[in-house]
Every structure is written in structure tokens, then in C-alpha cells.
Length: 282
Image (cartoon, rainbow, N blue to C red; front, side, top):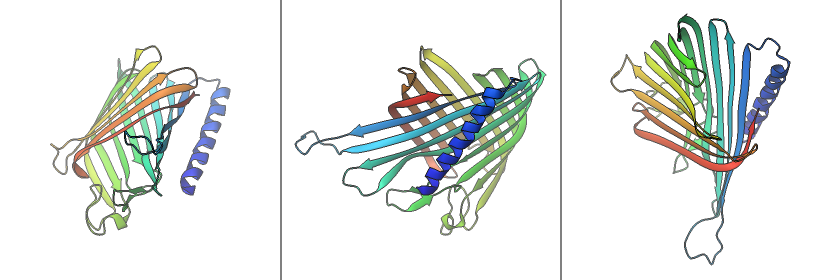
């Protein structure tokens, strides 16, 4: 937990520096904006409550930060996503992790014609804290697993809220600590190995729109096919983030993520987080 707290302090320091640079940027090639949310959930029952239930308290931190560059025929879009959540159930000594994400997306494009760009994209995903299964066995920790994708392609970008990037030659690297593969495969990495290399095609789409005033929906979709092994089994990663602003500082947030990767588990993984809390844009 100390490492996690230190990570937050370090990231906030970086963001503060970035915000100061934005204030003094007179060239205006960079556009920087971010959103920080702190969501809280709490349920309490006294011993006379006959309907059943267990008292609990939960909290979630979220950061969504964009720093984009545009000059003449060049665009460079970058997005940093952080999420971390904990819950405590009354009578349980353990504090359970409910959310943990670190993701960086970078997409560089040089205009080819109209709304089309020659592109190069990079994606990195990992987590900050240790993870346990229902039996309290360690199954993950910081940088294990870690996912990297890199590849050239073509970008179609209508505006900042709608774009699709296709990369037919994408390299993908998965890293896990050797102790997770000592007795069998883990996250697609074979037993006894610490890395898995894949080469295939990637499609990344982004779409953000407003349902109504103060209600925005952000969608991200990544599809990946590995040429080297079962290319018909497409990896899917879909993320949706709904922000419902109550006022300048309060909002209700809904985050949904669905993942299918048959190398990790032959089932759809679903994560959903909902909460009411403090929301700050910068």
C-alpha cells in the first residue's frame, strides 16, 4: 500500500508540473485537459435490520488525462488513465481491491489526405497493486502482467471525439513475473516463461458523445488478432466511461470494461464501477 500511495504522490506531482506548463504555453500547439474523480459508496445496517445485508464502505479514485499536440499536418494524441479502488466489509479483516488500472495510449499521425493520416500507435497497460483471487492467493502485482502494443498503420480522424486507427503490423508483448508461471501458464505466458511475443493486426476506435446536457459517454475499443497463433480468435477490450455532472464538483460516474482474451481465460471478463463523488476538471 505504501508503494501505491507513493505512486499517487509522484503522479500528482507530474500533473501539477504539466498544468503549470499549460498555463505558460503561448504556442498553443499542445492541448491538455484532465479529470480527477473520487467516488464513495457506503452501506450500513444495524443488528435489528431484518432484510439482511452486510455493512461496507468503498472508495474509488480515477484519473483521465489528455495531452494532445496538433501542428499543420501532424497530430499526436496521448491519454493517461489511472483507476484504483478499495472496499472494506464489516467483519472481514482484509481490505479488498475493487479496481486497479494504469493505461497509456499514444497515437501519432501525419496527414495523408483529407481525414486520413499515416500513423504510429503505442499502448501500455498494467496495474499498481497486488491482486488476489477468492482464495486469497496472489495472482498479480505491479508490472505483472504488463502489456505493450506498438505498430504503424493508418488513422481516420474526423475530430477529437471520433477516430479509428488500423495497424496491420502490430507487435504485442506480455510480461509477467516468473513466479506466476512456475506451475503453469499465466496471462497467456507459457509455463516457465516470463514473456510472450505476438505479431498481428490491431484496430483501435474512440468515440465520445453527449447523451444530454452534462452527461457524456466515452467509448474505447481495441481489437487484436495474432497472426502467429489462432488469428481467428480476436482479443477484445471495450471500455465505456459515463460521467453525469451534478455541478462543478459533484458527479456520478459509471465505468464498464469487457475483455475477451482466450490466452488468459476462455470467458468474457467484465468490470463495472458506479459511484457518486467529487469530480474535478483541470
